[in-house]
Amino acid sequence: MTPSDTTGALQLDPEVALRREPFGALAYHYGTRRLTFLRSKKDAALAPRLAERMKGGLSAPICLTWEITYGCNLACIHCLSSSGRRDPRELSTDEAKAVIDELHDLKVFYVNIGGGEPTIRPDFYELVDYAVTRGVGVKFSTNGSTITPESATRLAGTDYVDVQISIDGADEATNDAVRGAGSYAAARRAMDALAGAGFGAFKISVVITRHNVSQLDEFERLADGYGAQLRLTRLRPSGRGADSWAELHPSAEQQVSLYQWLVQRPDVLTGDSFFHLSALGEPLPGLNLCGAGRVVCLIDPVGDVYACPFVLHPDFKAGSVRDTGGFASVWRSSELFTSLREPASAGACASCGSYDACQGGCMAAKFFTGLPLDGPDPECVKGHGSRLLDSVPAGAAPSPGPGHSVPVALTRRRSLAR
Image (cartoon, rainbow, N blue to C red; front, side, top):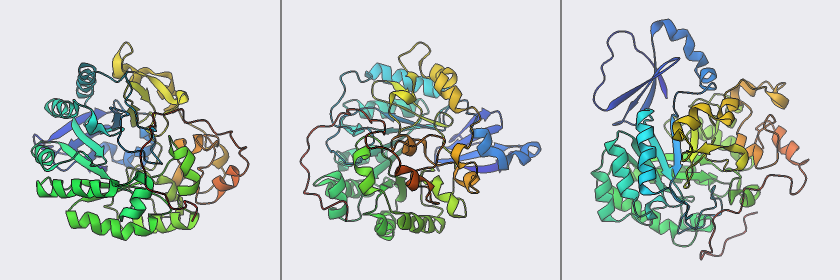
């Protein structure tokens, strides 16, 4: 998101949507997929405090993640929602369309659709088409297994749709050890299909682990070869990731290398995923704050609304789109979201000179490793989190829940502790 001055006439083309906020406005360009913060000259002094104002919440989310199904044909060992089986309580097609109508009315510019594997839901393309007709852009994440030349051509002909193909290794061995046998080949076939259909700059999404962080340059070359955008995401100890995080998350040395790599490549997308690394020096692009319940939230397949895509836990459930008042009421009035928007103490991090840079790190990472929410991030670059982790008793971290996992044939994994 970038700041801009609205002095004088603001020329908006049909591809630009504008949403007023107390501090100015947000503009989203559906063509470039670029979000811009607009302000007048009299509000120019506000720009340095934009992140602080964001902490108080927005009239609607900037980024809304919607997991439309838990059904998935893979069983990735770090899946944040432990997906596998579909839930019989999933929102119906009509209920899903009603949610899209609400998002339109709230001027939510786009929705990140995921799962599970969202494309296995029979009405997936119907919902995508409906969202587009209602002016809600769609960005969806897929393992690529259902993307054919025919569906790629359909997607290439649909406005305001972004496709994100997930891989977790620049080669088959590294990827399939995490995502399952044949998953790398399926993802590459999907990339080939999108490129062949002339889709344009689709995204290649990578969850960074200690086994693939050394492949950053290879991921970059892969994306460049397709004319795609590279998106890197932080591994969280959520869902099945709770069981694999300790063995998969990058080492302290690898975190530093990752930070240095990202600083040199501001065009690599991260979704503000690594703001805890900003304590190492120059801030990474983005708001550098936890946006849970403030600028982001998640709707799960049965309509429950959570503060963040990485904390699918009863403690962070704000309500349901099936409740009276729907999603809008949850966003505006839930006790949880109201509390998250209140000024918060730096807690145990108050004495650290890097707090303003990292804001204490990721709420989900702290919660699912058993650390206090006002304490340091478990991957704190100053080492405070790792030292605190040593004092967490075995079994004390909250359970991520039973999940929706089903047995899936995987390749024999190499030792994760290597």
